[in-house]
Length: 217
Image 1 (cartoon, rainbow, N blue to C red):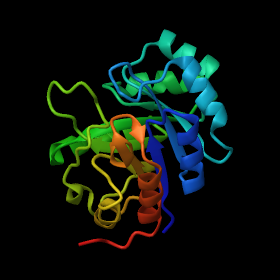
Image 2: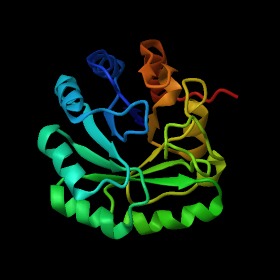
Image 3: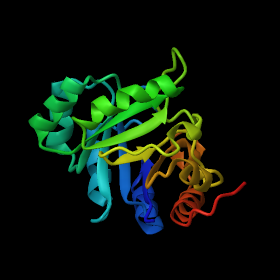
Image 4: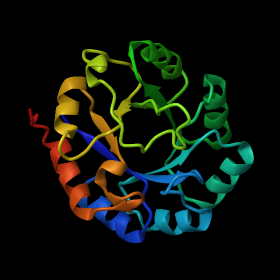
């Protein structure tokens, strides 16, 4: 089974080189002012241009309006838009049509009831990101280092490609893959030495653990 890895929240050109060298398939650029990983558009453009061919550049946005998305898409070379807020299925469709880019919709999971919404978004998104639901009143919709009960996904399959996120680290990603059957995984805080500061050793270790998933029990 081939596993694809997304490293989210890149901040520097060095991060871009590290992610590519480690063998990650996706690089996430965050456009959300409350996040320690937030990028201004000019920063993001420089960083996106430094990401080598073969690594998909993903813009993470949270309930962004058209003006914000217009500015991002106009100046930053992208391969995908990630919607990490409360965007409705109709909004997902609007964004796909407006920009002609694949759209990944994040869905927060805390318990089995939260799985119901997944089928709705499979009909409108190109990919899904199944993440841990943030705590009430949390500043960030993701990147909080929280995991959900991965057993909730055991044996479940959807026609739309999906990616597992939430609390993943080099030490637990193999077990998460084993329990969920995920073929794509996303990490941000789990490969940092401080909020917003990526750690090259942790990135390499994460990709190695994910792509050679021997469970650690």
